[in-house]
Image 1 (cartoon, rainbow, N blue to C red):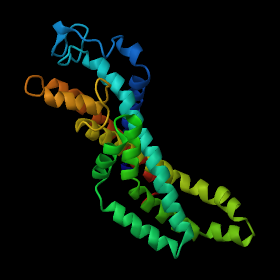
Image 2: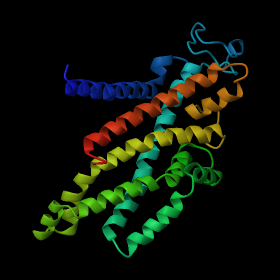
Image 3: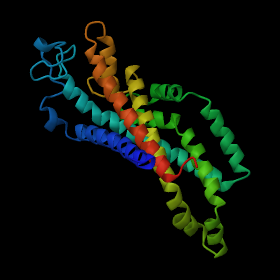
Image 4: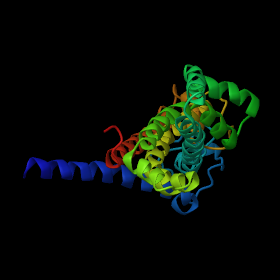
Length: 276
């Protein structure tokens, strides 16, 4: 086998594995009742802290006798929705800021970038934590808080891409033919910047999942009995001295989803030519 053939096969499998894993997680999130058949809020006193492989409860039960498999599956929808929401909203905010900064140029570009750098100096989770104190609990509040706290990296990337495209030869050629600014943006700029936007959405989704898990672990995100991976990690941490498996399962789901999204984002970034 040639070196190039080996590299191509390796690249194929590194893309296929995270795709299949994410597809499995999405199916878990969209078809919870069909896959578990158990109410995630149903409590059974005789099953309190039942260990894994208990008949009818493959991952065991929590300290209220609720089935952990059904709670993990129902929490998948919430955590993935949080990640996707943060990915889309933070990319929208950062994209608008970065593209406007790149297009407007002086005197607006330096002012916008200095403002961004001041905001960028503050830790994302700190901004989100402070915002949650005012927004309250809930999925929407988590998405908004994490998006406001984490759009700055997207803005910097899309500003750089805008500056590159603005000076591209095909853009100069379009201007020379008398194309209107609106048509220039719609026909020439947006089709070339959208692959970068898609990559940034994928890169932001893991941050949204991890951010939701962190806020819920701290008691600032979703409130029990609603299940999410962060809520389950919080419950598992409290039960760690007597039942370590309660922490292992949601932590494993979080790690697998983060790694899968990151691998797919890296793959898409290479395909789109980012970093060249």
